[in-house]
Picture 1 (cartoon, rainbow, N blue to C red):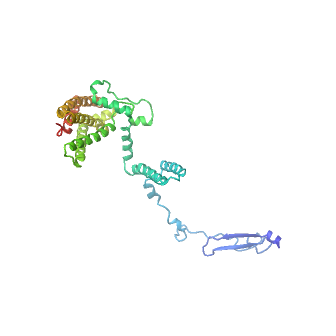
Picture 2: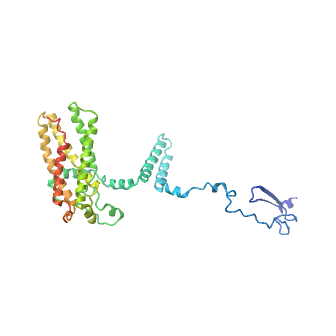
Length: 357
């Protein structure tokens, strides 16, 4: 009996038709009725299963009708990219070694959220990723650059070199930037000093209102809006003058730049002068009790001269010599001089002197 089962085999097969179900065949190699024996003349042994028509939707598998729409899927931005996957993986590895910390999952979720916002949002808004990449250049500063730049703005009459450093090495970043970063070039415009100077000036203005007993929360928004609106109007006028001179196309041909961010940075240094004027006048008003306004305007003359000279030399290097020389638009010399003199007007307009004695 043992030899009989040793020479026998159990074989399971399922047919392609759903009506027959699963058939189990007990196969005896010594039997003439073995359906898999070569000696058996079973009429079903040589028949192949009937092919399924390609046009019949009833015989198709259930998952075939639920196939994903690849055209629609390709139009959706891929938030899960290799950079995001590597960031989350590193965060998970760090979190696995510090599971006793109750804030581990919170830190992990916050890191995932920041990664999603940095990469996903930038991909969803057209042009945002490029704008943020260009904006990052204007904040490439350090403490040494900030000190040197402040001295250059507040004492520009003592400096002679105003040429920016051109990048001469080859590389993808060099082709995009064209100039050295502010951390390596004192003549490069930045947005860190204008931004911080604006915040300082707004807070000092609120302090002046407070010491006079006239502070209200709208002071912060009013001073900020006045400064920002004046600067935007100034940048628009400068850009219109450069466009009338065809300076942008000439500068692009000479590998120079006159972008909106450059103009915002250059015109934003006035907040540094405004802050120094207000500090000097406010200090005299507190400790000398008289002469606050006189001290303010004395400092105003110095900072106005230095700021105008700074604008004159900076824009003289920003605007090509050939701009406006073909008879179309204003002359280059008049435009540069007008930009320099406009700094006196903006300093006077944005000054807070009504509370100085």
